[in-house]
Image 1 (cartoon, rainbow, N blue to C red):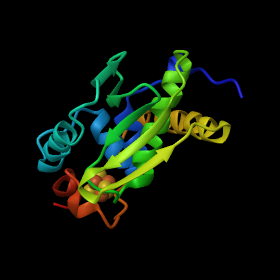
Image 2: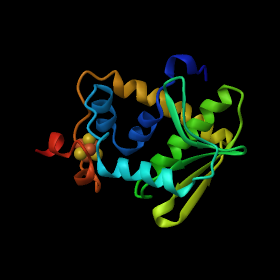
Image 3: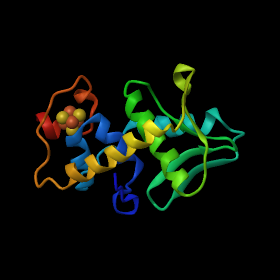
Length: 168
Ligand code: SF4
């Protein structure tokens, strides 16, 4: 497959949203950004602040596209509030690993759920790299749509910042 990373690279949250809901991805891309003040985002930041006080580097922003919570010597870490959307979290972190690899940096990834005292380790396998590339192609397809993808009800819609927009 002839894959053009430069043309398709995007920010980490869009990878996450692709796996949560394509409609959410489209709305977010069009500037309808309603989640920045949500309590959970703030709580997630607080948990990140207070649970790992000895880590050296936090909130590393690369190319204005990916923002890594914690960068340690062997690994990068993301801090999440709950594991309800754990697959989306995992794909977001794999994308960060993929992105770093393109920059010549190879690390492992860890997702921390401090509130649940749980962590998950992720590794960038060749299969995961292909999945990330397919996800980037899919994101472009979704964002090229003139109208948002249809509402498809999911168990977590009531917790989504766009709930009123979709169901109001
Ligand atoms: S409310 Fe449901 S359908 Fe609407 S954007 Fe959120 S997750 Fe998608």
